[in-house]
Image 1: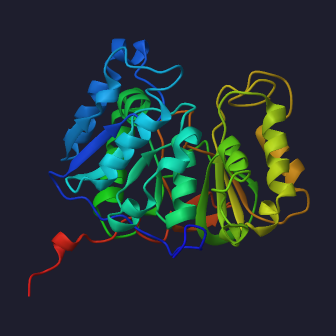
Image 2: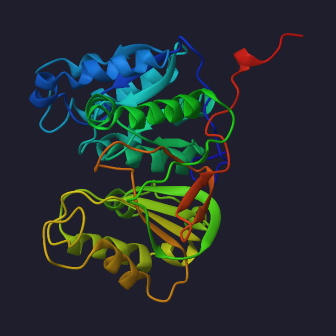
Length: 345
């Protein structure tokens, strides 16, 4: 199979207690704020509490940095490829997001992923990796919390009951070859357009979705057929969000999808309502304006992305969306039973 051929869905192997999880510098450096707040150390503690061993990247040493990145693209690609090829490493979690992944897409060892698929967790810039790896290998991408700002940051700010709920979700996501089922609904979830849909989850940060489609690593258009598109955005302008959605319209993506799930916006200038800092249109008004008369269900205000602790959104997994009932259910497992779990003849 060539890299450009449409691959089948590739589920990573399930983790077992005691497996090694690597916290990797897949994009940005360990900045001074996270050092002072001990966010990385707290993230290690969360993962150990889930029953895993943890290895932290040497590229996350204090002071280690190349411009806005943890290292050069070649250095980050070398570390990622080494982790993909290391049989002891069973999952990889991005330390943080950033602006770096575009620089090393052409250096990734896709064959190593096909040979030994592993969960790769993260959002923000890491969402770009999920889209590219899903496009090239079929790998299920774990759009989920990053280590330092997520496990070591946002998880510390939620009530204990919510944190316990998240720990259970993530543990089952990584270790159980059974579907997670319905994700926990909260009062922030809103029906922006009623309806039901079933299809594979595809998405991430909306600017990364739009930008990757301009490269040779773009998802083939048919990968959006019947999909439930999920997206969020952080920073920038409300007009940028409107423009990115129009890019998806002009590319035909909005005519192919079966439904849409929108995350909680974060720090968007000129946006009215939650997540904005202006008196302009709300995010729901922007979405419905661009969708026009496309009669697809739209669920907004779902907790994934930059606005706080993340619900997991596995890229490629089939889901059921009911916007009016405010439900989103994962119908398939994100991992497959590992060969170590098979009985010996």
